[in-house]
Image (cartoon, rainbow over all chains, first blue to last red; front, side):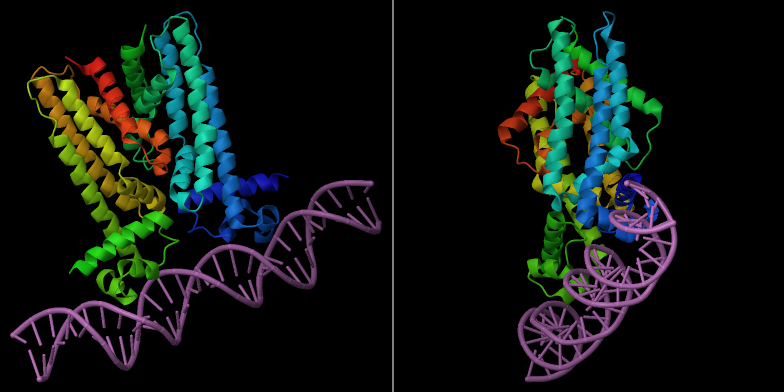
Length: 198
Length: 198
DNA sequence: AGAAATCTAGACTCACGAGTCTAAAAACAT
DNA sequence: ATGTTTTTAGACTCGTGAGTCTAGATTTCT
């Protein structure tokens, strides 16, 4: 049933906007256009609701990130534009409203859900890192990059891509113009290629 | 009176450990070894207590960061070890238990205190960035670095220093061995000098 | 259509925690 | 010493929100 989806979506939005503790189940139900009892029918209690909402959101975010990484292929031409494209997409993923909200929730409620944080961290972030490392390794093998440790390279590339966003977007408070996103991506790729370019 | 300090310290610790909403004023008072009424005498209400506790913690963290930046001076010798020293200190600041707790609280309670986030962000993070940019500009002027935009350089340097920590420390969940901290600092400085070294 | 399941509105219980109050006990001041 | 201020323990009020329950409406399946 798509009531379930509506509830999950509303729960995520509301929890993200006002915080888990500050949001009543009544409000989630209202936002989903559903009776409170229906929420309890589907999820049993408030904590389960949060877990499922977070898990669903993390799944969506991971998929988007992986889709961006998929585009990192050796076209035979200059690597820079390809890297910049992928970099920009990863930056956009990171700046997505839901993405900020997800990180905020995980950060915020890690006292309540230490396990969820770990699951998402390992199941989502590490999965993306691994996929990206695979691609870099492949490019290195083809002689397009000069690196020995793909994991170290990925670590720095993602740091260069996402690090500057924290400050610029004020931890998700400020909406980042796409011009700035392109700047960050370009600067990151430039530095990356300085060090790892063939 | 040092009761006040005890309350602030206890408040920060407790709020950080279990979250603002999940922590009762009673518990804070107990942890501070003080009666609940005393807490209300000093701070009026729970929200003010949180604000002051966060502000005090942010002040401490900023001071530590600035002290690290102060050490970035031109000794005349090789720049690398100096940068590595400063970098390591900044990494240590970032990995400090209280530092993680502060960021978690700000992230978590930004729904409740959007203004605090902004104040800390501007008053602390930007202050450190500016101080660091000043030092880099000075080194560039002395011909020890090759850069035109100190702000851009600082942005990337701090990204390289702190970015990898998020994943490695699992957002403050995992305690980072000092060996890893040195690795991260060294790698960051290495990449930084590749691009901006004279 | 008719039976079975699900959904709805809203009243209800109940625990918990913020903030107040009181009367006594420290701590402090001069 | 004595008056003043602060602190203390603990009882108390009161709002809020999680979760339950009920009786009726709506949907779904056959």
